[in-house]
Image 1 (cartoon, rainbow, N blue to C red):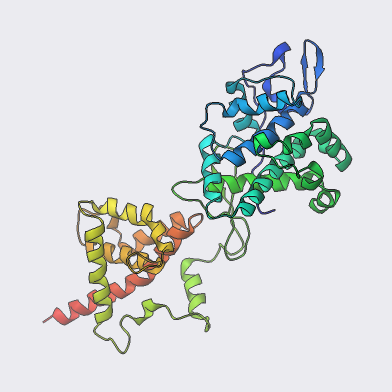
Image 2 (cartoon, rainbow, N blue to C red):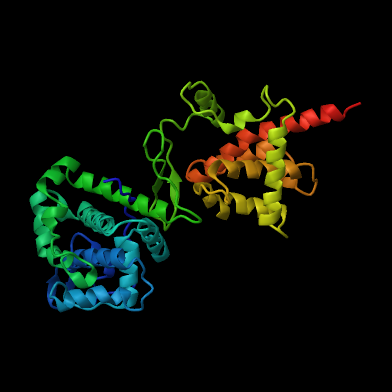
Amino acid sequence: KQLAASSWPKQRSIAHAMPGGADLMSLYGATGGRTKGGVMPVAEEGFALAVGYALLWASRRDSCNVGFFTAVSEVLRAQGVTRMNWSRTTMVDFVTECVFNSITQKGLSTFLQRAVKGLTREQRDMLMYDFVQSVVYSYLARHESGADYDSAIAFCVNSKIDAVLQCTRLGGCPDWSVSTLLSQDIWDQLGGQAGLKEVSKKFFTHIVAGAQMPCPVQELCDVCGEPRCKSVGKRLELVYVACRCESLTFEQKSAMAARNPKRPRDSNERGMNSLDTAGQGIKETYERKLQVVAVRYPNKTAKEIITKMIGADVARDSLNTSDEITGQQGGRLLASYLHSIKDDASNDFLSSGVKNFLQTQLDKYRMFYPSQKGLLEQALLFLPKLEQLSAAAAAAAAP
């Protein structure tokens, strides 16, 4: 599975206690807790609750409903899977801190709502299946009963996971069972409990990457396919991981592309060639882009315009219609606007030059934001054409 996750946080004390003194963490612990009536297998109950919440969250994709955090314990208690109803406050802590590794409620909802866009019903069901499967894997990866396959399956049976997976009130499917989520072949292929842990780590990184604002980040390198980031178990925080091709600079990648005879000719190269020594095509493009800026961003400051171009409006790069900015045109628009304001002393952020400004922004966005990365690279490719045009105009005006 390519779904992603992060390492489990260290256990911490939570103030919401169970009857008899067993704290909430024992719900997700390996040894269970003690109540007045004797030892209660609270770890099994925690497992059932974890799977139930994974089902409900994947099906609703939002936890805003007032009854969301009490619904699972109520349904599972009515079915005899769990022994007691839990308060909303207790379940919020259990779900966010334990089941989903401190990922925020908003982060989970954002990831799921983005992930289902454009999917068919069958694809949405598969997303839910992977979501729930990864929660099962992450629970078994840290529980002592998951040390071998037979023990893991016995733990699932004792926790009544099949009944939870098949509960349609929580979004389950009558055809789902532990044997389909984790067969002996899958166990052997993953390498046992350690393999389950790796799958769950990838799962949580995938969620955190997909929940980033203003847009999701790409956790895998589009060149070598290796991870470029990982979750650290602190809400929506990601840390950068260097892949094998990251050592190349932008200039090196551009040089490699230029040496490739199969590369389609970039329309940026059509500017001031032998058929257009006056740079008329570049001049017309430059003037058109400034007109677009004037119409699109009236009464905006320079910083506000640039922020919009690189931020909220970068999504227009994915559109390919005559009245919107295409991926390549977005970079031309940004380069043209920056070139037009570079001599204004009030724009101190350009004091080191337009190229240095663009390169700084590229270094900031290149790791995790492919849309911004593409726009800035296109701007850097187009900027020399504008500088060449200005130089030619200055030379022509010289006495």
